[in-house]
Amino acid sequence: MSRPARALLDAGALKHNLQQVRLHAQRSRVMAIVKANAYGHGLAWVARTLGESADAFGVSSIEEGLQLRAAGVTRPVCLLEGFFSADELPLLSKQRLEPVIHHDGQLRALEQASPLLRLTVWIKVDTGMHRLGFPPVAVENIVKQLRNSRAVTGVRIMSHFARAEFPNDDVTRSQINDFAKLIRNLELETSLANSAGILAWPSSHFDWVRPGIMLYGASPLMDKDAATLDLKPVMTLESALIAVPPRKKGDAIGYGGDWRCPEDMPVGVAAIGYGDGYPRHAPPGTPVLVNGRRVPTVGRVSMDMITLDLRTQPQAKVGDPVVLWGQGLPVEQVAQSAGTVSYELLCQVTERIPRVVV
Ligand SMILES: *Cc1c(COP(=O)(O)O)cnc(C)c1O
Image (cartoon, rainbow, N blue to C red):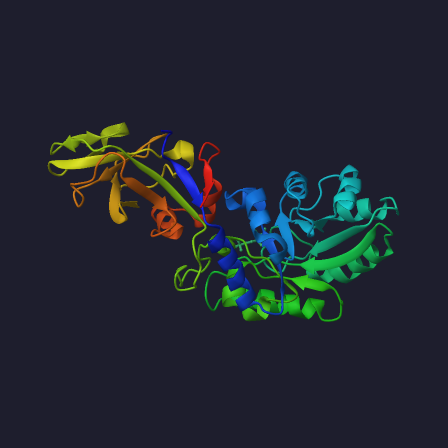
């Protein structure tokens, strides 16, 4: 027997979630966002499972792009953080990796690039995120410049939402309006919506949508959970009980010893910890499933273990299944308890957790 901690991956759920994207954005093409090892799910597995049903893939680095090519992906691959130096351009051209560009140095590099290259580039425009992107007023000129560059054979444009997860939000409304105004006379392929835009802001769909978190089955919206949105969790992080010792009233549990048993009670130990990516900051009370039923954590999260209040499950025994998130326990709820977002929990599942396709 090996350590029971593992991440089960559900291919059917992944395909279902892509169908949900299609259902919401029927006139748009889909760039499946698979950066950060496909939000922790495994880049090659996600890309192969989606296959030709995604129109393109989005990653953050050339290395991730090359991994996709090595996995046999033939669809366009977009580099969401662009390129970092001019010497990368021949490789991008050869591997058909499409950089998003956001600063003048990149424009100059493209101008000076060999005319034998064939590059599709995406202009990043800043409509309110205030992170990356050219200001809208600069775009018309940039398009002209790019069209004069022989190495550039395709030009597209994208922007990114700052807070589309909030319903009825003025910032989001103005981002959509500004983007729509900007692209009106440009005749370029366009993209704005992330998962929240796809689900909550239909006027943001444009030519390409860029779903990330919803593909993996977590809700991107503040006011709706994944089940309401008909999204299915792709990853179920599970382990098992490895001890169920009875404790006495007043016993201090684990590191620091600041959680004490309020009465005589069983405190289960599950083989999962921050060394696996379970959040160390998850406070006592964070929900976990034991035998499919919710129990709260107690004490601190260790590197390899967590401790559980088993008062409602006195029959629980060594070997019983424990689910940390996924099937039956939405990752958003664990994230909320730990003061973070589902994105972080999913992409920080460490390498020592075997990914097992079910
Ligand atoms: C990560 C990312 C997305 C996907 O965002 P989700 O909220 O996960 O849907 C879309 N576009 C860009 C530019 C991104 O970096």
